[in-house]
Length: 109
Length: 112
Image (cartoon, rainbow over all chains, first blue to last red; front, side, top):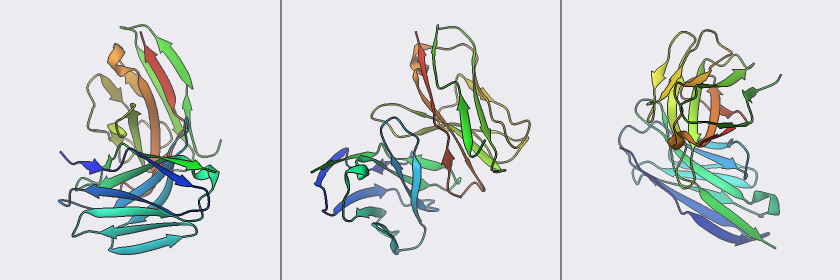
């Protein structure tokens, strides 16, 4: 099967920058998604990368390297409301999403 | 309604009982999905439907069935619930099978 690896938990300070990494298996790759999930709520879409490079969207950016099977989500100017889990998901060869377990991001004042 | 809704919000169910989780979307999305989310694990796909009238099995389909009689509705049925089916269930939809997925608020199911 395919494995999506991302850190279980990260801590950062309000106003700072944090990078959440994700690695995936490269066979049959059709795109990489990032979702945000606040505790007790549904996941919501953040970004989609299918080509190499950086996609910037406000305070959030997402990077993809297809040859390395690697992506990261960069969050700038962290706010307390950014405390959430961040889910990495690969769109596989069957166009189904394979999800990582998520990275719980804790923001401290 | 706007978006995607699920019912019930939560349910406690005795083992062996039959249960249907409801999901409705009003975005006219072609594709719909059922996931379960368990602590420490990623979302796992149970069943999916790429268009009305068709369904497919995901990663963990055993013990679950679905139907897609029309575009809007995608119910998930547990024929005979077991404790290992205790989980949070999310329904999602997307305009195409490779597009962004929109999630419902989830159903928290406990099987005793």
